[in-house]
Image 1 (tube, rainbow, N blue to C red):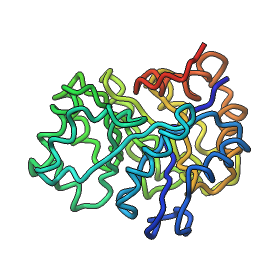
Image 2 (cartoon, rainbow, N blue to C red; image 1 turned 180 degrees about the horizontal axis):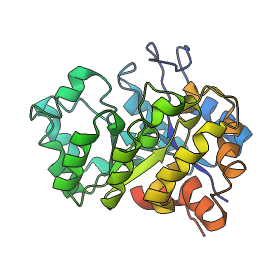
Image 3 (cartoon, rainbow, N blue to C red; image 1 turned 90 degrees about the horizontal axis):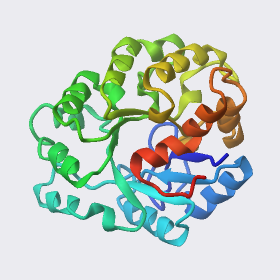
Image 4 (cartoon, one colour; image 1 turned 30 degrees about the horizontal axis):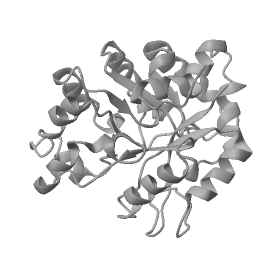
Length: 273
């Protein structure tokens, strides 16, 4: 079974945010070593532009050097009008599959309501560019965008859960989240799941909530991944949490969740049989 991580970061400078490893750099080669030890075949890089403004170029360089191992969900400052021209031909860059902005800060989330990003959604829709974001932070706005642009593929980061919550608090908005599954242009990255539990591996208090999200979106729109540089467990445990501990995720569906579904959604040809 080919295993593809739906989200990692690499960087060469800056101060990593939140719970990410407090190291000055994390290179493609370091990521590859950890991936090989964990049995991960490929990974989708999300440049952490918030702390390393050169990370987009670094990610493309990694995809150029290791085309069978890395692809990119890139970014640029979307609030700067002069950058709007960048979206045309965006996929012509090495390994580029789409776009990703976390929109974590309240100041950035204002862009969702004041018109700053209204140019982005139709432009990405025309270019066939999937967009990933921390939509669990702003589910009503996320739904509005998804409904208004039915041909724009949108991905909810980190299970679509409450980012600052753990255990039951992480699932506080799950009804609103699973309701989005009715929109066929919405998918969920099941990344960062171990972060949401205060229990030790195998995080049994997450199993039922994750199953509810999976049941709503199905194996074609529920993508395993890690965000490994902020996980409280080993890379291998991030893998086996899904491949060995979730009894409701069998066979062909497991293969879809562990990589095939993501690659089909974003158009990354990794030669699945």
